[in-house]
Length: 347
Ligand code: PEP
Ligand code: MN
Image 1 (cartoon, rainbow, N blue to C red):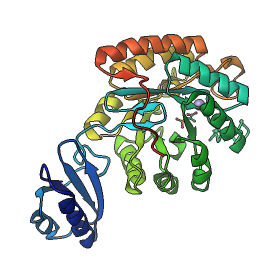
Image 2 (spheres, helix red, strand yellow):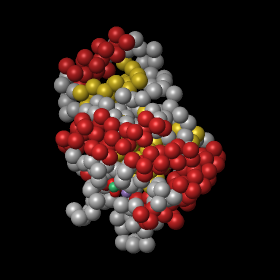
Image 3 (tube, protein in one colour):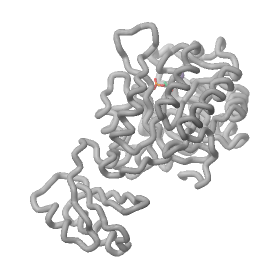
């Protein structure tokens, strides 16, 4: 249920209604909008709850939330959300680009990548230190050593570090180095991991599982939001279909659909979405045209030598050219690419 406060409701009235919601055994989430504040009351629906809340001071309306997800839904918050950490700004008209290698391999690789992607317009640096590989024999990442290298690259460039976390126990350690925790496609429904990320001060990039429905993705995001972390970005990275020309099939309709259903920013991953470097630039541009709030793109100083996903990684020069095109399309659709964060880090 959503308790919609009147325009100009006082802080005392809002506090009172939060207390009433909690007395009724429901969890409250306050969403402050530009026009008015709403309080999402989450929990088992009981008889008379609506009546009990409707008569409260400063209450304009009490309406049910129809979507299975609550805090993530547009019903609860009609304005788009923006996730902002260091230089990275994603959502509400800001197009943030996260770029870097699939895996952190050594300090020189990640630091040179950070400088190159920053010069081209990226505001976030990606790089996996914990790699969830399909085969146990593939490179598994440099773990904490890799995180330290990412922190060095961040110190030199100011880019926000986006890196994957694969288990709930690692969340506090990865959060020490990361500005954004990436939850990978293989872990989208690892609910204990989602809860742990929901208790982290870092923002979260939640990738869609290769076979997950939109409702499953949004309910996974709800696990994070429900723990009190509002800084969640959703990432479409392609789904598994009968088609084998591309590694996955990248549905850009997800952007438009998700913008209707949720206020959370939507990031497109054209690298995993296609699996071929030659397809990445056009799909990145198409994602911007479709209204994506962010891009995450694999870039490597020497893709041929990459320890993972080299075949879908752009060179510095290819990334630079891609950014030029994206910038022009972003301007045409009214979003700002790469604008530095003004409101400071989330943590
Ligand atoms: C990655 O970003 O390198 C990755 C493993 O992505 P996904 O979880 O989408 O497969
Ligand atoms: Mn990868």
